[in-house]
Length: 245
Length: 238
Picture (tube, rainbow over the protein chains, first blue to last red):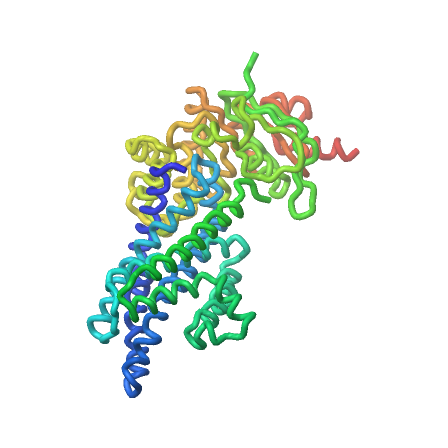
C-alpha cells in the first residue's frame, strides 16, 4: 500500500463526482428530502414516532447510496479497461479500494452533516447523545456501504447485475435491522441472523444515540461496523485478481 | 547479439473454454518496433495481455526485461494501451494524465510532455468523453508514455486515425525505439507492416512468420505483406 496512490485514487474519484452535478445534487439533497418526507408522514402521529424511525433512516441512506454508487462505479472501471490498466501499474489493490472508501466516506460526511442538520435543526429530531456522533456513525455506515459495494461488484458481470445486488445484499439487512420489528422480538433464527448483519449495528448505534447520552455502546456498535467494513475490503482485495480471463 | 526484451516459452492460454494460445514460443528484440499483425480474434490481444501480465495463463513462461511478466519491478517500466480507451471519460485529458502520473509517481511535468507527444495540446482541457475516437485513443496512448517506460505494449493504437496522425505516431514509435525503448504494436491492418522493423504474423494463435518485412516477403515469395500472409496461410493448409 502506498499513501500517495491511495490519495490519488480518492482525489480522482472526488473530481469525477464533482464534475457530475446531477449525482452530486442527489447525493447531498436526497437524504434531506427523504427525512422531510418521513417527518411529514408522521405529522398526525405522536412525535416519538419520528424519533423512532428517523435515526434508522439516517443510518440507511449513506449505506444504501454508497453501496449502489460504489458497485456501479467499480464495475465501470472493470468494463472500461481502466482497472486493468491500473493493476498493470504500481497500484496496490488496497490502494484502489481504500481510495474509493476515503472518497465516498468524505461524500458521506457531507451528506450526513446536511441530513443531520435538517433532521435535528428543522424537523426537531430528538437526540439525547452528542449530535456530532450521529455524523460519525453516518460516515462509518457509508464506508460499510462502499466496502460491501466493492465486494458485490466482484460478483457482477454487468452494471445491470450490479444494480440487482442492491435488493440481494441490502434489503434483507433493512428488513432485519430492527426498524420494522425490534430485533429481540424477531423469531430466534432471524434474530440470530440479524446479529451477524452489519446494518443492525449501524441502526443500533443511531438509536442508542437518540435515546441515551452514554456513548460507550455506540462506540462498540461502531467497532462492529468498522470490523465488517474492513473484512469486506479485505475480501474485496482478494476478489480483485491482477490476472483475468 | 541483440538482447531480447521479451521471451515467451510454451505459453498456453485458455479463454472461455477455448484454447487461444497453445505452447507459443517467441522472442522480441529490445529497442526496435515490432509489429504483431493478424486478423481480429487471432490471439493478438491475449498475447499482449500475457506479456503485460494481466492475462490468466494456463502454462508457460513469459519473461519481460529479465523479470517474470507482470511482476512488481515491471509495473512502472511497461506502458500498456488496451484496445478500449482506458481513460476516465468524465475527466479531462489533463486530469486523467495527472491521476496516472501520481499513480506512477512520476513528475507532473511529464503530463504536458506526453500531451505534446501525442499532439493533444489543443484538447488538454477537454473532457475525455467528448473526444473523437482517434483523440481518445491518443489520450490513452499518452498515459502509456508517462514516465518513459522501457517497453511499450500497444494494442491497435492507430485504429481509426487520420493518415497524417498515423504517420506521426509511427514516427513517434521509431524515435522511441531509437532511444532504446522496445515497442510492440498490434494491428489488423496489413499495410502497417511496412512501418515495422520486425514483423510477427499471427493467425489462430500461431505465429506464421517472424522477421523483418523484407525477410517475411522474400520467404513467402510475395510482393507485399498481405500476399505473404495469404501464401503462408495456404502453405500451412496444404
